[in-house]
Image 1 (cartoon, rainbow, N blue to C red):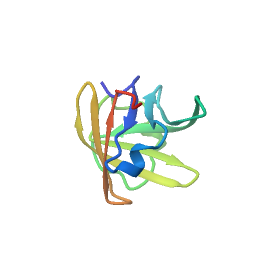
Image 2: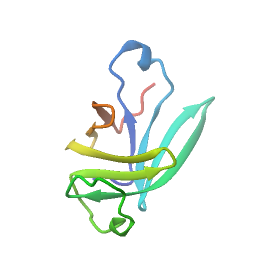
Image 3: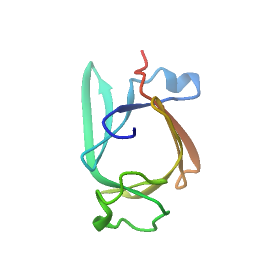
Image 4: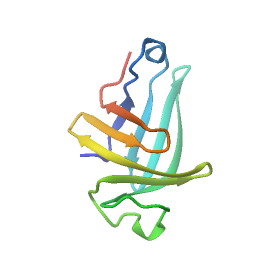
Amino acid sequence: MLEGKDWYVKFVDEEYNKRAPQGIRLENNKFISFLYSNNSRREAAVPYYLSPSQDKTFIASKIGLYKSGNYIVTQDQYGFMCAKILSLTDDTLTIYCPWNRQQLTFTTKRPN
């Protein structure tokens, strides 16, 4: 249910709602961040894995190990991320990001 879909971030305030569509896609063990600019899609991809536990470091041997989990774990040039999955349905994903203490909600419906 998590993989193979474009998950568009739902911004909560008006200023952010004016931004171009952006979000994430999880596919083939890649965490893909995307945004649209001038009708063109730009992407950046890093490895990710799902984990049943809150990892403190990126453990490469876990890539592809679990098909489900409570956490999405990635590492890129800027650092480590372990986001808790709060809820997941066919069209809505909500995660908690402890590094900035924010909850983010994503939808499969692309904003205008």
